[in-house]
Image (cartoon, rainbow, N blue to C red; front, side, top):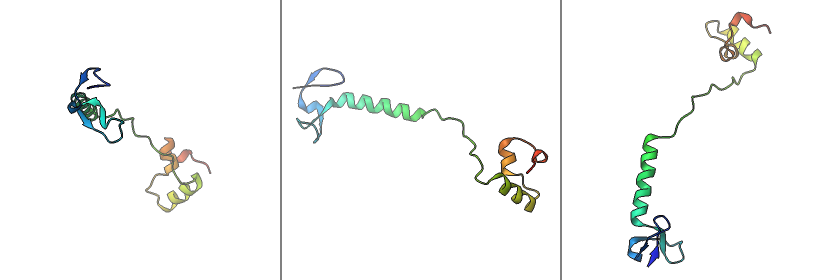
Length: 93
């Protein structure tokens, strides 16, 4: 007989899964408690973790590099200005 660590009831060794790492060769939780824990975990994972809103990473180019690229491509908005939420005309380099 062995006591389940979750439900605290005495059950025969047949009610516990085999576990080579345990001293007595059986899991600390009974098979029924393991099933319930697995169901609970699966339900939590089905809902999924709460995700934070995606963050905008800072531009990898320096401000001057972005300005140079913008002058070569006039239709493109400067990364620094785009991420700073300010108009292109407000930049003074």
